[in-house]
Length: 584
Image 1 (tube, helix red, strand yellow):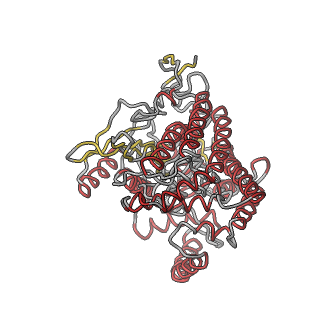
Image 2 (spheres, rainbow, N blue to C red):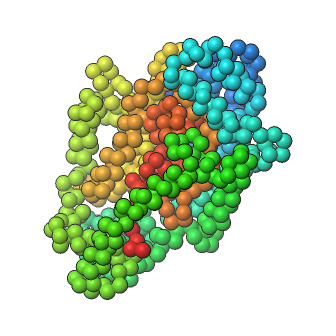
Image 3 (cartoon, helix red, strand yellow):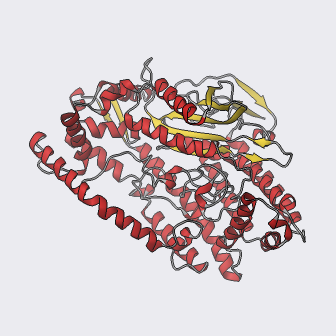
């Protein structure tokens, strides 16, 4: 019998997500909450423990395998007899693994990490098995070729077409040794993706800059000092503690006058996961080699062609031409601005050679000189509650939706908030907001799907629910959280992705056969987190499926559900990486 606690850390299973508040009233539970809540409106975050994940996953995978075997015997399948049951199986799988994957991103722990790795391998094997199921492939082809297909609406016809495409991209038409090799590659890529993101998270968490001499804080605003002091206090240290998380790293690089310390932080940040046991270099090398091999097995000249198969761009050359044209038009202005920054740094700041760790600092000083304002001076105008009220007012003005907070739902951390969206007829969607950076939480900002809009087999319309996750500075003491203009932009940006998911009108899930998620493999070693969103995520239109919203990122193992990616893929990471650039 397992103990379940609202804080999810009372027995040491989950990390101390509630900060210094370690004692919470616990209750006993005999049922596996991941299985008992399959048809609930929300995940039971107050009850989930790592030991629940694998038994629940095993049960659903076994049920799905048995169900698929029965479905493939149909000679004249239609939507209701074939595709809808497949969507229902996918939904059950997402309900079990989605919360586990989300907790792995926002409440990482050694115990959960071990469970997650095992689950990812089981899901990858299941996905590869599904994609190469000849009988299921044949059944869906019979549906496509039969009279029932013509009677489907546009949305459901698209789901069938995209599913057949995904079978081909998943190796369904490979034979013999090639088929076995393709499955082996998928399994290995899934493992490498998980390794990559864990290396990055561990490397980010491993480095801190602990300062005890106040002279080293010259130029750093009081609010940033206060946050650093609060971090140090949380670690039972004197002085100030700076980390490589964006809310700490970015302002340090913007304001710290100590050039040697800026260099130290910059080198630590840009070399994360690039040496020792956490070195992602061999991980990336193997990912690239396996991606190419998998693409070749399917008849593509390279992985770029394979990646673009379900997308709008016709070829890698078209993508490269677009990027080269964009670069050619952007470069002259960039060179002009860089020359101006170098001149200012030399003349006004005494920095004759502008280095990468000087760019943010010099840019902030130039902004002050040019516009007599800084990001820090704007923060008092953007307290958290005012920002949220402004966001919700905009949603009301644009879409006629009101936003109401519900404080009576299970959450994974005390700072998480839950909001519901309503139109004149009732509730249409909801979202969780997890705004603050903390230990054991992956960096960056992203939108992901918790529950997708879906017309269930019983006819009930399931309402969509989104995760909005950011890493902004938490309140210091009893003061409200104050956000920079960039952070406000980030929140609005991510909420836009959330609206894409929450306001969709589609009723079919689609994308349940995602054959591409495992090949994202990760980003460069110093890039933001490969968001560690494992299988079980929801998805939408970015991969050509018909669902609404974002989903897992390209660094994830195969998303067993819809094939979309989160904005960290759609936006090439521009919305979640710290805006600290190099003059090179």
